[in-house]
Length: 565
Image (cartoon, rainbow, N blue to C red; front, side, top):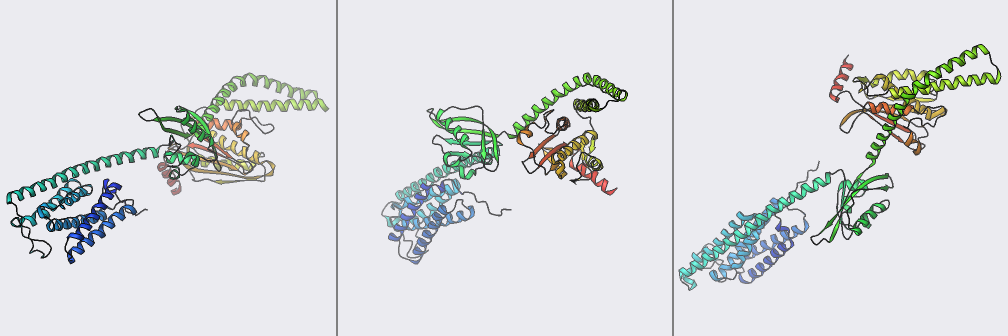
């Protein structure tokens, strides 16, 4: 947890270079005039020294620190303003009194207090300045601190009291006039700037939370804006990208993306939709969809280009699933139509051949031909049975199935199955003793059995390891159970992986090519999904996501009941 104190700016104007320059010039002039015109007393020297020290601290802090600390900077500014007002009061008292040229310093201090303390602060400052200016003129204050405040009463000024009074009154009005004007505008500017800052922060937060990459490039090819999603998709640090030319940022693997931006700037035309592929050394190829908008100024001159892009990997994967589902549905309809037309004649042929075999007692080649007919008839009957199973798959009736119980049943079946080599080790990592999922037990069993047989066939006679694991997860805010079947076989080639769920596609001699399509069809009907991960030489992993029957809390209650019983 970050315990650092978040510091906020005291004022917008007080950080501006021109304001710092104004404050610096004012301080230098005040110190110079104070050193020349004020008496060399311990009080005056201490006052000038304090003022100089705190002014330097203030200016250096502005350059060294990115943010103000309100309490710290507010205290320093109060000390600086207090020293200024005292020095100015002493200078006016020392030189000219009511007609002193140093009255102008009072006005400069009043104006400079407005950015820090706004209207109320500037009025308070003008009031203090008025007191320090007027009191020594109307009253003899030399007895307060002898040698510093001179007796500058009206009698010693050589003018009528009315003229002196109106002169002081006009100066005081001038003080309050500048206090009101500077304080009002400083306050309005502060609140306006704060509103603009809030709008900017809200806008940046919206842009940063976008699930699409957003990038703005000016007419010279400099990156003006680059959100975090763009950095994740392009594998580039957003802080590094901002303010740099695209030639420095879009390097190897992003040539096509850079060319898209350059062509858009040259043509000066927006593009509604485009697709290209970016390549990462470690992440591989990623398809992205792009759209662009052109920025122009009031004279229609090109200012830059905005590129909005997003990862199309999931969209393409979903599209492939939809196309596969359409193909499976078409094949299912076809299977339902032809199965009955073929199965009856096939049964007649197979029965007739068996009768002939019993009565003719053939030998040699004739007997082998007869056996071949029976064998192929049986194989064709198996294919037709798979056809019918495939065609009958539909939306599962409402119900629930215990996945853990299905896995336990299959443990015994696996041991006695001749299709699984003895040197294949099958291990299980079942997360819970009760894993309720949506579906029918026979269909869940068919999914798992087909995946295990597929993994065993991939391992072959050389043997290996098959891992069956379950895991609770969330997919698109849905509670799911992940059933994962992993083997350490030779892996699945890329061209095979693209077609493995197509009906009748098989790489195994004697296979029907309907095992995995049936699995995919059942999973789709149950409202789940299936993902495949494989690399050449490191095996394959099939992940089946099945909807859970109820929320995690309810399932935990069932688990607790089972444990207690």
